[in-house]
Amino acid sequence: MASNATEYIQHHLTFWKSSHEGGFWTLHLDTFSVSLILGFIFLAVFASVARNAKMENPGRLQMFIETIVEMVDTQVKEIFHAKSKVIAPLALTIFVWIFLMNTMDLLPVDLVPMAAQWVGYTFFGADPHHTYFRVVPSADVNATFAMSLSVMLCIIGFSISAKGLGGWIKELFTAPFHAEGLVMSIILAPVNFAFQLVELAAKPISLALRLFGNMYSGELIFILIALLPVAFQWILGAPWAIFHILVITLQAFVFMMLTIVYLSLAVEKH
Amino acid sequence: MEFNATLLGQAITFAILVWFTMKFVWPPLTNMMDERAKRIADGLAAAERGKQDLEAAEKRVADELRQAKQQATELILAAEKRANQIVDEAKDAARTEGAKLVADAKAQIDQEVLRAKESLREQVASLAVNGAEKILRKEIDAAKHADLLASIKAEF
Image (cartoon, rainbow over all chains, first blue to last red):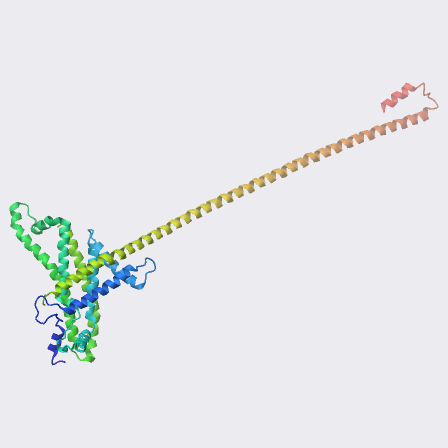
């Protein structure tokens, strides 16, 4: 194993692509399918609990779901003071979906790739050396940026619906530096616009890269631990996995909280 | 880091998830939870009200009990007073009756004594007259001394 460690790591860090040539229209089938399945699990569990929710004498699953909903609801109510039907479900979806995607990091690093290789080789006659499967969708920039850019669109949408299109555009040029006279306003307009653009761009980038960085490094460390002799893997693997339980929850929570904060900033006047 | 169409696919998935959550997950759950919170609050309020009612009822019961006790005490006092009064009246009646009886008896006794005296006097008078008659028979003529004899008789 040690002789071809680089190859092993690289194999683990390669996506299962829909085409080998690459290019923009290539899909990462592993990221896409795993996140889709997790999304459906999330929806199925939550929707069935919501459909069968009992007011009296709720079951354990319902209480668990209610705890999560309550937590999200409390955070939203504390931070976001305007009225919105979207933000709370959005926050809940972000939290649970990211948590589920991050949880994939706790699966043994070789389990799903080997299963994919076996299935590919047995049923489709695929070459195991060229069958790739990365099981943690949140360690894929596409997944994290898909969410953070959607959040950015929500930020813009919330801003426009709160201040009107004209109000939003006006704010792009008049904040954060307020000027008194017309001349100063014109001078400050490009500066303000640059600041606003940076601010607008920094939000999705920081959201996405924070989650991606945490998950990617976590995955990489699991892979490196897997390179150790089998007898010693647990010495590092167990503490890292236990620590990672905290990390995956925290990252999901942070993404959710920052989304709520950004959206509440978007509807408030500067 | 390579960006490609996966991003679009993920964004679409994300949008669908959010839409579904907004439509079918969030509203029923939060509505149910709000309703439950309201029901619990109502229940607690009702319990509080019940407790207050109970307290009021207990207070009323205590009041009425006290009133009843007071009434009973008053009744007993009145009854005692009345009993004393009756006893006094009876005593008075007995006393007057007794006095009357004694007076009657005294009057009767006086009368008897008077009568006894009268008869005694008459007997003594007749005895004396008889005695005097016997003594004087020889010397005094009854017819001669009739007025004398009558005056003596009257003196007795």
